[in-house]
Amino acid sequence: MRVDVISIFPDYFAPLDLSLIGKARASGTLDLAVHDLRTWTHDVHRTVDDTPYGGGPGMVMRPEPWGAALDAVAPVPADGSPPHLLVPSPVGRRFTQAFAYELAAQPHLVFACGRYEGIDQRVLDHAATRMPVTEVSLGDYVLFGGEVAVIVILEAVTRLLPGVLGNAGSLDEESHAHGLLEAPVYTKPPAWRGHDVPAILRSGDHGRIARWRRDEALLRTANRRPDMLAALPPGTLDKRDVAT
Ligand code: SAM
Image 1 (cartoon, rainbow, N blue to C red):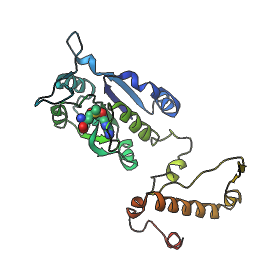
Image 2: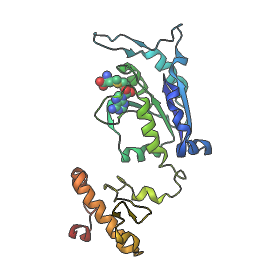
Image 3: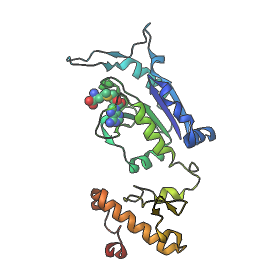
Image 4: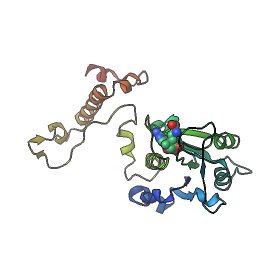
């Protein structure tokens, strides 16, 4: 997968050289390039912002550097499909695991990181005439800028790419994979500070362990996220689930 990120703080993305995402970059599974928006400014101060039309507090990112940056980083190919432009924003579509799966299936993503009061709306409107554009929100709160949101989205998407996780089975069993939260997990030692690992997990009976994990996942989801349980598609629960 190819990913281009445009930001006025390219150094923010240094952690993407670490851990499994760093390995995905090294192996070529994730072809990531980070671009400094100020490359596309032409004044001595390398200005990217200005006061908002209509008045009010804060500054707005000017359209000219963004237009030139997107022309360079996300040109529309003569043949083939254009990249998908993702603009982190608190007004955007909520980022979820399902959305992460959608993005993981796409060959080329471009992220435009806003700062200040955001990017002049015309940048998004113009880009939408050339490529798919989606504003994406991490949640109902406001960050300083889009950089952290991009790191979060890239972590969630990269671990879904084939070959990135040592055991792809982890993806199938984890929280949000099938509309449930994951059951609690334990490792050695079997007893620690008066707390024991549930005996069933040490029984070696894989059928009963699978049943226990399923029951715990259902209980946790019911207790912590009843909204998720209510949203399960019909047929997701089997008779034995309902009996628990
Ligand atoms: N004035 C904007 C508003 O009220 O909707 C908030 C701008 S915020 C201070 C600056 C930038 O941070 C945004 O352009 C966006 O890139 C990023 N940002 C802030 N909150 C975010 C969120 N919940 N999800 C994704 N990106 C966010």
